[in-house]
Image 1 (cartoon, one colour):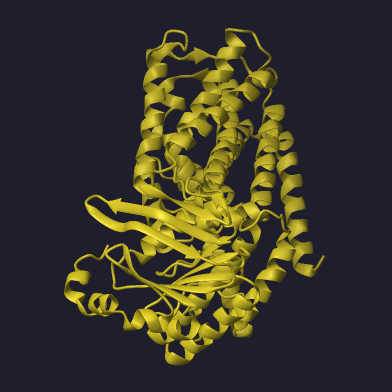
Image 2 (cartoon, rainbow over the protein chains, first blue to last red):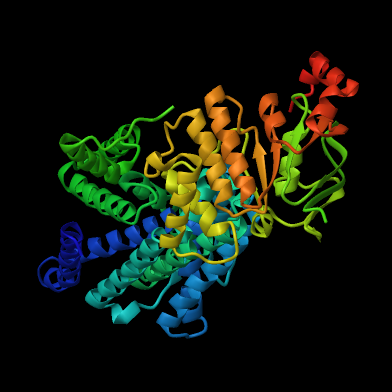
Length: 322
Length: 247
């Protein structure tokens, strides 16, 4: 292990210890912070889940669908069939995975904006159906039993563990041959196929992995906030949130979406408490500026600062050649 | 026995018949050139062989196995490698990572990332990209992008290599280097099917030549034979009509 890696491992260890210790402190002094932290972590998982799918060039607006399927499946099997909550959440994620495989097959040929609209239409359809059906509680929604007896500290640790799992999966994807397949498909699907990349298989797999994490986050939301309705869990705000954080933080990386989610939510909280009226305008303005002037997100800024320091020492770029 | 057989292959786009009842027979170890005016159906033929398009009629057979219906990735695994006329590198990857993609997915024997990188670097060296392995592909010049196309296709370890205008846009010196690389490829028992407009390169390289015009084969044989063929001369001189059939 070289010096740089040692620093990275140390930094990760410090963050992890702080993240695990945080709820025990917050629960005694600032319970509201614990609530915010749960929100941020859920948001970060959703963002990382969206990013893993985007790595194959599929820019989804269907994350509300997977989130909602997770929430409703778990809520229904625990209330109507009396299944244990953990089992319900697992079933919720699996239903999201199976539906994602189907949706992935259907949208294989769609590109860019057509893919986005197709996935949005799917999500909206689920919202309308859930709204109309009696057994889902219709527009009135459902009351859901609490996870882990409603205790905030274990609930926090649970969602932190899910985030860690998502980080490990994302990290492994980016360090394996999958990374090459995903990037090749995103850049040029036809060429990827000619190079031997099984395009259908990797696109659908990315959908399934992504949906698993979106589904479990939705199910978690149901059992922590104890009430769900179609307009809330199948909301476009969920899908848009899932894509804003990775773009803000830095696409196709593990750290970027998480960083984006944390900075966006913390920033939103600070704005909300300092600027009483009209804080969404300032929030929107900052978002627009970042997307316009920092196309590679926060991670990109960090990378250019680092390479700027490096080029100060020695010229690393080679001439372009003939 | 033939390595690649096209048997009456036809492909139409709407009313335009791009490839019309084409039959070809490529033997193992040879360099076979497909020439013809713009819009003659050469690149469409490549897309049919590599599986990016499916034919309306006809059969494509690789080493005795009918591959007409199978997807591009499976054809790559069976040994068909190709370059693209409009250079299409994978952006967001370095030069060596582009080549590694071929090493990782182009054949069925699994490779570790380290093995793939080592083998990809060897191929970069062979085509003259060894100084640029860790560069981003953005900003590479035409000659280096052409080299990258060849390197990436070679990384799939093809038995049949399809080269789509790898000489176009090169200086005479660069073209000579490319000819040397293609000869070197043939030494490794790879069969080469190439499309090119640079006639001096075709003359130097090709064992046999087929001439396409409006999707049909109008001549086949040695370069000297087809170059003297009156139909071929007419096809090349009757440019105005040919130009209107570009796709």
